[in-house]
Image 1: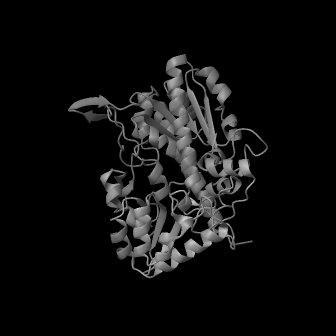
Image 2 (image 1 turned 30 degrees about the vertical axis):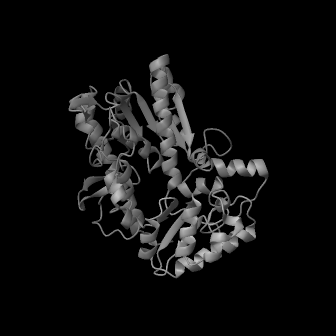
Image 3 (image 1 turned 135 degrees about the vertical axis):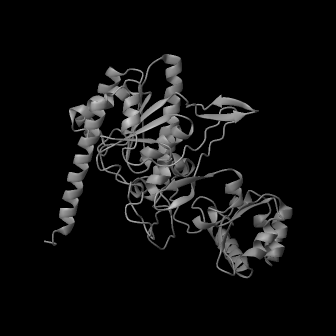
Length: 437
């Protein structure tokens, strides 16, 4: 079936229609890259071990959905893919995988290198066999160096990159971000690398290896701050509700009713005057330290100047309610600001909805709900969300038949995976039942 969008009444193929991706991934960093390719029209075949992606049934906190319901992390980054469940320790499953790889365009993985080599799925082996295949891998700390094979979760890469050290308050321990932004950043970089390699293949006719990492993505996210430190030798201590490298008013302020508003910049003097009058900080309107946009982003300010203007604005914001501030700030287009929103509020934000940044998925045991959808919008060949996350092994029959695996082998592969899964689940149940040593 043609994945398609519409432009001026004409059916147009999606940009990656006809591209086949074999994905062997877990958690977020790998699967989120595959999700982007899927939304842009690629066929993404997620090859899972007998027990499935480890995040399939992860529950997180405050999760009252029925036991065995797909986990929110899995749902978020596996929409619209096909799942093929295989026990790749068996020759039959490995042979079937290679039937798929023969026709694939991309092999995408965040498995650790030793595991891939053990299965015969290292880059050298696949590149020799399939020279046009794009081999895309992402890990925690980069493909070289002493920690190339070190295990990683989002916070570990954030810590190593400097982000954690510079987040939080100077008089408290460093803070993690409130979301796993580094895993998703790594996925973005990997998807961009894959698209670049596909374009290069069109020009040069060969496949190649694409590599990135969570650490690399974290450094990319902090280019300005890291460059500033390298150029100046600055320490840039943690600044709490403010930015370590921006002096002046830039920061988050609490209102009278406990909500928060972020003030980034006041671009014209008339807007600064209006803010000072509304805030009843009249002296700031004529203070020579804050009379230009540059000064209001810290140009020429001392640390003491910044502390003073922040203290005055902190007191001012605390004197008025959130709605008073919002109503005023909407009259001032030259003030760059936003009300701090919770994730619950984000799901209903009119700007998010107007841009179709959310999409509906359906999960057994929960029903329909929203998740983040396709964010890249193309005018001529748009992509689109592709539906629900797959049940484990739901594509074993259709997908393997599509790539020429016989009915007998399909049945055997599914049986082997089922038996391996049952054995693993029995072992896990036994371990849970054993009394603590």
